[in-house]
Length: 251
Ligand SMILES: [Zn+2]
Ligand SMILES: [Zn+2]
Image (cartoon, rainbow, N blue to C red; front, side, top):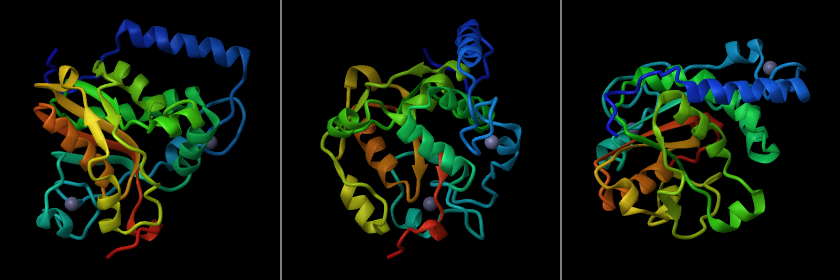
């Protein structure tokens, strides 16, 4: 079903989902995923510390820069996604929360983060039909047992009333971690790394989601696969954006 922009729908499915968490928190009192303080999954202090990304940013990939318009890299070659935006900078307390999500299977934290970032995604006003997380390769999925991006993407899709499509996109091969690679190496590393299910994406306007983006190379490669399978357009959102001072080698 085609949605007319993203609307925050306080629908019954979301309330049901929330009430399950209230029950679980009562049975197993949680700790904050950002600072470890007891009693809540994502405390008020950590909520306040989330740093928004200030304008101006690149019109396409959302990289913070000194002016509006396209960044140098997007001027050279536009990414395959139409737009990429990130909720916050890749710094504490979100950095710790994402680590916890990745290695501790903290599903409740995923719900709490999706709840706080849903307003940000809704105000982007993108005309999207479905939401899908960047998939893990089979090997990594077997090792970890779950996709950490799905921990946030699934409740976010319920909150925003979007079709959740976790299996529309898959990895064609395993790729090494992008950490420590230059922008050019990142593109090479993920080239042709994905394929999409035409029956699920054809004619769709898709919102792709990842936990952290740096150059947007992974999202662009996944968007290319979606477009090749007939997606109408692809938008991309990440929880956090790693900036050049977070260790990206610039070539
Ligand atoms: Zn906290
Ligand atoms: Zn750019």
